[in-house]
Image (tube, rainbow, N blue to C red; front, side):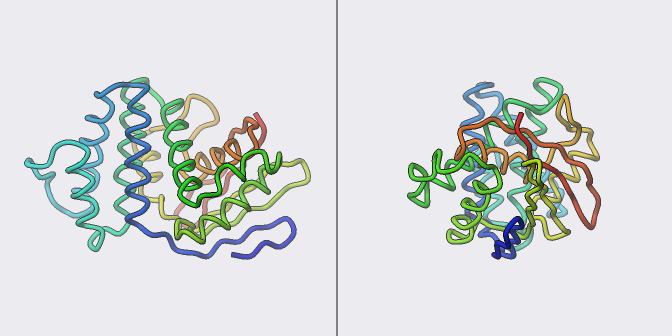
Length: 231
């Protein structure tokens, strides 16, 4: 990863199994909002998504979050981006329950990012270490690279304090986001959902203790571009 004044460039590749386990924790945390039905729905939708990517029918003998997690991990050699199945399950379940994504997805992102930061042992020292979203993201990406959860992306700090995020076709969450677009799964305002944007908003809020929001400005097969700003 390089940090050139107002630009952060990340070139690392993530540990896929770690992603699955972090997102599993996010499912369990979000279920505190919606109850057990949320976990059941996520498990069903994630299993369907995973099976489709593997080119098979959802196994009838696999039920419940733990078994779905094991199914995803077992098949990471066949579908390396299996964590997308859980991400998709979270968004689809929330969309089915309330018509759009919102508080649940934000809570899931916050929990996953706190887990990643917590696993580094540096969470307490990072909180309120900066009030700037760009600096918060830079601190997070340094840690993320060290614990192998970073992935290719670029961040640019604008003069107005907003942070531009650019992702190419190596984005690990592209499969989930493509499904969101295809199925019309989105937020109530500011349009389409973006996994990378919502997680980096969470990072910014955890570290700065300020409120941020995001907007996905461009989504296509070659490049996605969005922005993070104070809300």
